Length: 102
Image 1 (cartoon, rainbow, N blue to C red):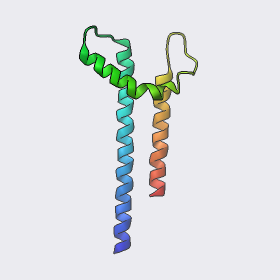
Image 2 (cartoon, one colour):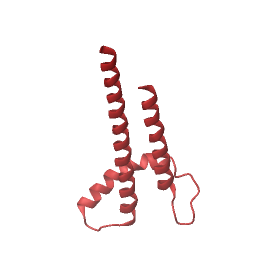
Image 3 (cartoon, rainbow, N blue to C red):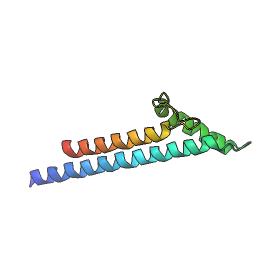
Image 4 (tube, helix red, strand yellow):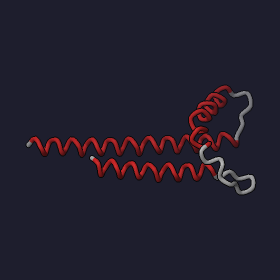
């Protein structure tokens, strides 16, 4: 009885951790997309837009800076696409490892 209960708790913990990682990563991906879109669009005299853009800059730029050294295709910066791809790959690896360990 006690063994099956602890096994069920570990399975529930693993599932909860996997869902947390999944949600966290998707929220961060959405923030990267918002950062890219707001970098193209400038709204003059908008404090709200400036605040959101500053927040996204502080949150996304350190991670995106890791990929800025990659070559670009003319005026297109592909570092956000590569960063999202690497982030999704890393999250799947973490989710798999959580499932294996727990």
